[in-house]
Image 1 (cartoon, helix red, strand yellow):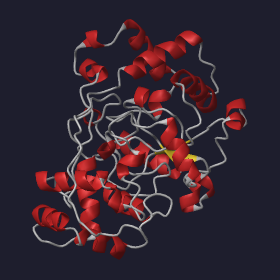
Image 2 (image 1 turned 30 degrees about the vertical axis):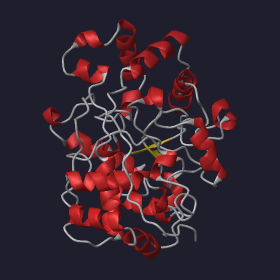
Image 3 (image 1 turned 90 degrees about the vertical axis):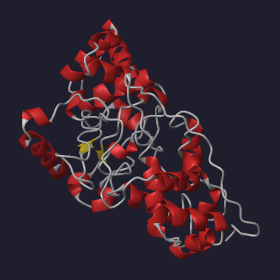
Length: 343
């Protein structure tokens, strides 16, 4: 709980004018000084994101589990991941640059570190070593040229690979939702049902965790720096029917990273942006229906049984959090005849 309390105290210490619980999504996230955005770096990151040659056997790209051409997550992807031994649902990458830590248990402090970890994870991209990936991409003339353009030299390195992928991922923003337009002053953008849902969302306690620009707690900025986590216990009320049915505590969350007893069933608070497009829900992808997910949350987090009308109104509010997706066109990948991608 200490990490959560620390985050809350930080928020409370900020002058009122600097922090509001309900905030519109900025067009772009805060960009770290160590990895400034450039068109060349973003273009390279996009190529790498879609290239299966970044996986050990040449079968998997970042887009395989984070399909940018479809809904942010899908039941089929979750099943495929579980077949590889991954117990958790694939988080959405939309607006991912507005988070301060990565993975469900917040084990990664930056998008750059997360990209590197994915590439070397035997359950995901399964590269046997950094040198294996560097050698593979260095053998492709088109990538050597792209790295030279992006990083002012011809060096292909794991650091630059991670930086390029992170730069592209920071472009995956979905601003200008109906809620964003509402919070900026156009009160006609929320229906009566959505406004009732927002009131329920506030009054029943949902806003205690799901607030800020990404509805995931403080974004990187005055309250939290990159690598500082914002966590919450899930489930809070133990021993419910839902906990047993959906096996919510089979996975102890952040405890697996820290081995701190206080971190059992503690999780990084997930974003609610585009929630209507990101089923299945919860860390284990156990629920596919948004109405059921809202009902479960009210019980396991607040020990409160929402009425059917309250659930419907909350869902109407959640619908307003879907933003405008950028157009994602497939990049042309550099060719390399004779490059063996099989270990």
